[in-house]
Image (cartoon, rainbow, N blue to C red):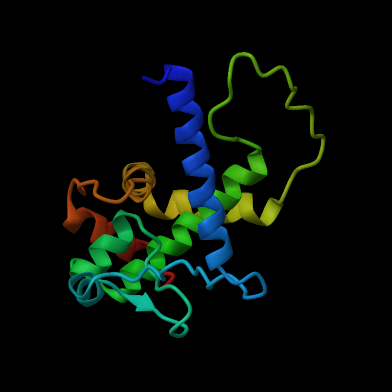
Length: 173
């Protein structure tokens, strides 16, 4: 009878022998086989439903709608191209205005970095265009557009008809 320690040593020696045998079987000078990541492509059904841009076989497909509720409504055919363009222009205007104000997203209560004081007027043309758009739309439509166009993918639009009318009243398509 052999002891437990002896059996452990033999098992370890057999494992080392197997490792050396495998290492000798692999040629030393050959490069490793190429390991490339698979290119993620949408399924055929998703390709039929979306608006995609594919640069080539090696490039992944890119969703050109922006991935929000406005893009989904455009793909579904519930709004037209001029509505989509007007909505994108409105989103850019609101984003530029918010960036000019310096309003960021979430800020922790532990964040002690000061916002600072900016004595400049900022980008006056953006503020004027923002106020002009607000007056042209009216308070209700303006806030409706801000609320609806900020919704993420999968969110439900409250009223597509009211969204169409508000986008039509923008008139910059």
